[in-house]
Length: 389
Image (cartoon, rainbow, N blue to C red; front, side, top):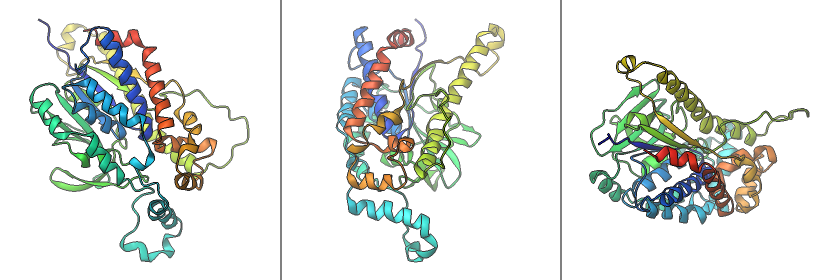
């Protein structure tokens, strides 16, 4: 009887873009069911998530005893999203967070009275706490791990305090933590605070205090300083990994024949977010491909003396630009949020990258779910080959 190979799932960050992941997983489920898998069977031994992907990952991990049920819960949330479920979109809430934050950014030297309690972020994401408590069943996570239905769950965050990337993981067995350059791992009991920290997009949502090595540190989005997004799954024992991206991993050169204009604040912020959420994943996939290619050419004798091992990887990423899709749905945002975003240029064509991360509205998320489903069905043979053994 062969040794069971552990399958890992990597769900990357991207705010509202994470709706794409749900469409991909829905299609993966249907492909496997048609191939004879039971609807309740969990295809993944190890689930790792970052930012909004951490929320999706934890929701799925909690339902490792019934994968179909977990997928249905995720679909219900993402197909019926409103921004008010994630951050305050009422005029008072926007004034208290966004308007004050932008004013302090511009005129902080005049506003010394706010030094005692300055606004911490552009948006107030307190509504997200209620959504997470409804979506995430943490006692169920403990049960599926103890029953051996899931090997491990990992959630990543970035410590503003220590300046390093932290992977928090909860496993069915003791797994030694790892330390790499600017990256550490910590075995912990995953809780709502880990998810809030992991999904705290820099500047947009406030940092969250977590205990790292017994010390309280303020943490933000796990995509920051995430030099190797795939590595947590490998450290936790994955032999093959399905990676779902939140943006196209390579873009064709854009036509810049017309004279360039100075970029808006939203355009700069969108560029920075694309760097945070997309670039590290593309580099890590390229690095893993090179390692696999090198290992494939080594004789068995040398392979037995190295700690490196080949890892099968399947990457599914959007076939269309998500910022262009977001541009078609800007008007679905509440007026207060549209007004705030228009002030920094996020409603203009070149600023919609920023909007694509914040557009938690069903018209947009449903289109991303459809795109993820469609892209995955086009890769049906690749999916079946990935899960074949």
